[in-house]
Length: 125
Image (cartoon, rainbow, N blue to C red; front, top):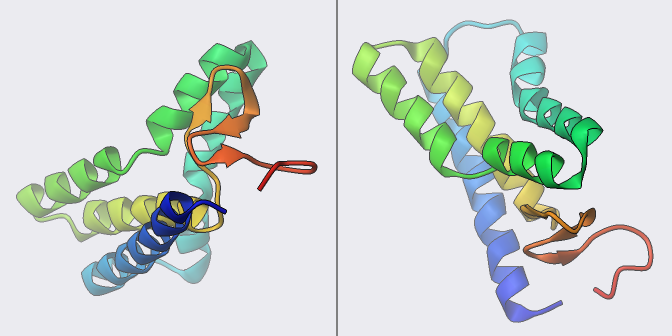
């Protein structure tokens, strides 16, 4: 594993922890199962792969960049909505956890090709 990949994975793990903490502190009073649902919603973007590699990569990446969950949290702060803050925190936690386990933003060449390297069986890392 390259040092840069290791740093990005550590950063992702930190973002995941921070996202969970933000969601917990905002505490909208959701039941435990709602937390799990919100946490996995970004993976619905994988459906873009039904339309091909390029569209799949674009939809996945749109749902897996750090900027959008931060924007959602800020909208929650601006509107005073703890539910929106928590949703943004859990989205951030999802993206960070993906980075922490080595999943990166997708390249249009294929699902296994990411900005952190190739994933899956027979990957060079």
